Structures are given as C-alpha cells and as structure tokens.
Image 1 (spheres, one colour):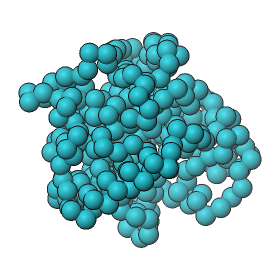
Image 2 (cartoon, one colour):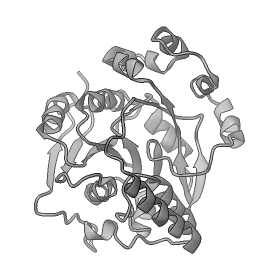
Image 3 (cartoon, rainbow, N blue to C red):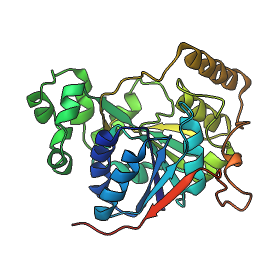
Length: 294
C-alpha cells in the first residue's frame, strides 16, 4: 500500500536536510515525500531542488504564502496533492530511524491509526547530527548520544527496546492515546472522512484534535511508541502567542465535548469531489522524480 509522507516545514533548511537524509535511508522506498511548506523563504525551495537530485523517492514541494502559523492549512493542501493510500504525517525537525516507514506498514491494522514516539534532543546535540550518523544509525543509539553530551535517563528506553519486546512495551505504555503529529499514520480515506485538519486551529493541540475526530468516527488508536522512533531536533516557538493557544484549546475541547467528526474548515476547500487538488492561485506545487541511490 503506497504511502505519502507529509513533512511540515517553515524556514528551517538545516533541520529539513537532516530529516530528508533519514527518509532517503529507509529500508523500504516505495513512498512519496510531500513537503508541506507554510510560507518559507526561497532558501527552502533551493534546498529541495538541490537535494532532490539524489532522492531515491519522488518529492513534491507544496508551498503557500506566509500568513502566520497555518500548519493545518498546508497539511490539508498536501493531503489534497498526495497520491498514497496511507498518510504518514511528521515535522521537518524530526529525523526518522531507517525502519520508520516499514514499521508503520507492518503494524497497520484496519480501523486504526498509529502513533509513535520521538526522542527530544538539545540544541548542541541537534547540531551534531550529520549524514553519517543518520545513515549508519549511530545517532539513534545511546552510546552516540551520550558521547555527544546527553545524560542517560529513563527516556533512553525508547532507543533500547527491540522487536519482539516492543509489542509488550507498547501495550504497557501509560502515554496518552493521541495522534502524535511528529510520528503518526492513518488511511487517507479516514482523513478524508473527517475532512482533514481543522483550520480553525493554529498552534496548540491541532494534532490531538485531528486524532479525536478520527476516534469519534470509529477509528481506534494504536500505540507503537517502542516500535518506531524520531529524533526531535531542538527549536524555539517564537511564533506562538497566548491568544493562539487559547483559541486552539477552545476548539479542541469543543471537539471533545461535542464528539465532533467533521472539520467545518478543512480539507474539502482544497480537494474536488473527484479527489483532485484545487489549490489557491498563489500556491505552488513543484514535483521532483526519484533518481535512485548514489
């Protein structure tokens, strides 16, 4: 079943390049990458054009004008452009381990969405991530991270658990059963059924709200916290305002209390009845074919 990998980004080319190294290094390569660009400057387009020349998978760059934090909007446009039967949704600051896409496929079940984990890195360690450490898998090991300056703690358990023990730890995990926007997947048809992401929301719980509507529609959550892992690169949140958080919290709690399924301002704005994309006049979609491994 073909997968569309949606990677949201905004003016973070150094981090996005590290993330793309991870996707070029996946154990399965029959997927497309869709970069959901929320109004970045031309440097991001230049990076994508350059790095696409060595990509073993097709890349689609979907860009919209900068209008503040509009992640839900660009994700919906990217879903409209996608061609996969399943959607894997993540961020441009999350570097995937090489088995990420394979694990999501292996663990997928009808009537479920999947949520994995991330391992958060401080800024200095984030900068030390290079292509070699990603491609060899060293960056995902406790030994490399400790040598790079991180102190051991209980969160390293996510790095150490391997199959078949991951199944047990996934079951026992006390973590909340939510859609985790950095490492989650579902059938595209299920995302379409709930009208995608809720564009009444900006920063603060937009992923959780999406997952709530999936659950209200009858799609169950499946934890794969110990089966797949992302390295979350450090970044600030200077774009977030108290008003933004408050509004998003209100929308999320209304969705929860009213058991809502459909997003009133969602995917249908950007997707025709026949399933084709209908983006805005100033939106840009640039496609790069796969060229194979070097």
